Image (cartoon, rainbow, N blue to C red):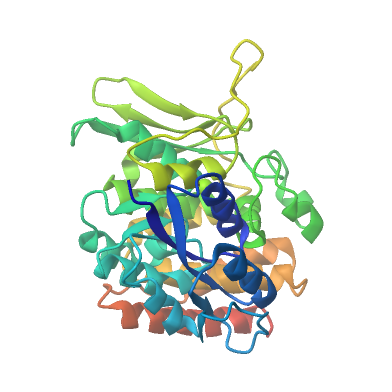
Length: 379
Ligand code: MG
């Protein structure tokens, strides 16, 4: 069997690095043929040398790049990233870029018939209306752990048998906190996620719980399930990665280690399963699994995101752009934790949803929302 030839977009980020670890375990099954990173030029060059990759993109045109292999074709800019997603030698594109910057690459990968392993949830949050009609059955494989879990629960089930999706949420580092207490949280506290090892942007999104709202929108598009039939449940142990409830009341749950390398590997191996070096669950010592309602009053970004998802059109793009600006400002210590919700809410309220026309339309809406949110964030 010839190896799966993979382009990794966002190779120096958390998911990208873990994807290369998975590929390293299966050199006869996975061949890395393209790499793209935002600005970590030294690590990108190191990866290109280690994997013997000929096609490499550094998105940030001003970033410094390390020493590339002699035969390497190095390009830069976001258009070059999208072009890499159409690489003739590739079978699959793993999109692990951060933010709406990943949309153009997802679009390009699907348009050129590549299988798309999607870790960039913003692609679907912003552009689900555009991307889903392009995706043929089996072409789009989710990497987000909850969506990978649901995807795996759906294998072999007849279409139309799903009654409800249950998206599990860890609750983040501030589960049980009050709004008053949240006002004083530090960047370090927000970055200390209790269960998952992830990049800084998604870790902050988990702390505000907007991540679960983004994931509901992602699930709505991926699985064509109405918002009324998507339930969010806080499950602090993060052992159940999500569940599917069927028409006969049966529920399938996906359980496993909290290790992103498992859903990444499943996207590569699907429909097969390969060995993974993760600790097995021992049900005799597991203890209890708790489930509770999310606190929608304290974590206002979550109901906001659900409202935005139901409204649809361009509003999710507006919310996402505002959130990216607000999170970047928080990571730079320019605004406080509760300002994230304030900035996102104000930006959403100032915009009315329009029907999505094209990629260019979405990108225009995205950049206008960024300018608006940036003003509120005090830039
Ligand atoms: Mg997730």
